[in-house]
Image 1 (spheres, rainbow, N blue to C red):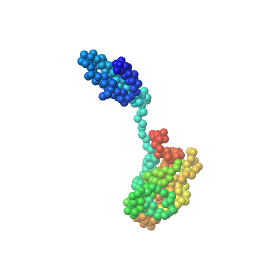
Image 2: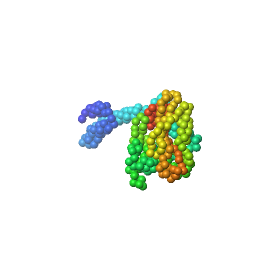
Image 3: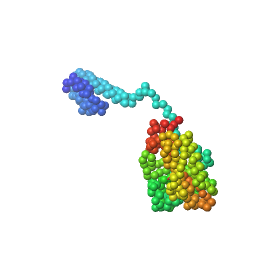
Image 4: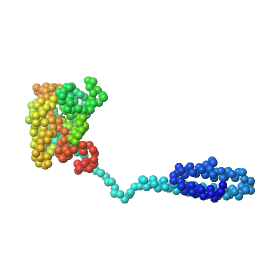
Length: 338
Ligand code: PHE
């Protein structure tokens, strides 16, 4: 084997190696058990002693020269790997900092708090109830027995788990079950609001499968529709202030109120001016519901209403797509933080 050639081929071959694993393989062809340098050194064993001395020196030089080539190439490849990793992980220290973003209160939470403040100022207490309800509280106790057509307007999500009557548990379709829950644990006079999350199989620009409602309930002796009108008018005027608001009651139907109404509001100014907008269901609490509360309808009467918090919020701020509330886009949300 020509020694000069051996060194030259090492120079060429290692120059062509592009990665550390390739380098490792090629190195074995020189220094592995049957590698060319290894075989060269082993051949010394066959030489006679005089020759061995001279050749040994030469071969050693060749070995060292190849080792140098191998090591230099390895260092160069390692440098390359490090450089590209540093480039990939580079931090541009000249970029402006991200700063500390100040959080804000979500518009729905803002409305929720506003509602609580307004109704508290009128002497209402605040209660919250479970989002997972029984069929009884969500429907039957509210005068909507099984197969009642009003149920089909409130299709919801059912759980595999069943209640003690063997009915599947469900996600409440409205906050009205809180009427019964609260009244069963709190004797009259009852004056309460129950804000919370509600669920229906519904999804478009103005409906979301999860939304928020606020239930209002006032039960006492001699509480009438006139009280509902006074309370609700005061509420919307305080909620939409400083915008001036008018309200009207339109006859409607709910199984748990009699008579029932939809409440519409009218803005006196702004771009919603002149259009009646529906914002609430309401009515005198039905005698069967009063009975399911454990109360005597001959003694106690009162009203209930249920309003959508998203709808109130959309009207207050002029938001036209309810899905914006749930997309967590900071460009939208930051408009509500102060
Ligand atoms: N629960 C009714 C709904 O979600 C609203 C309502 C509440 C109507 C209280 C009357 C009284 O549509």
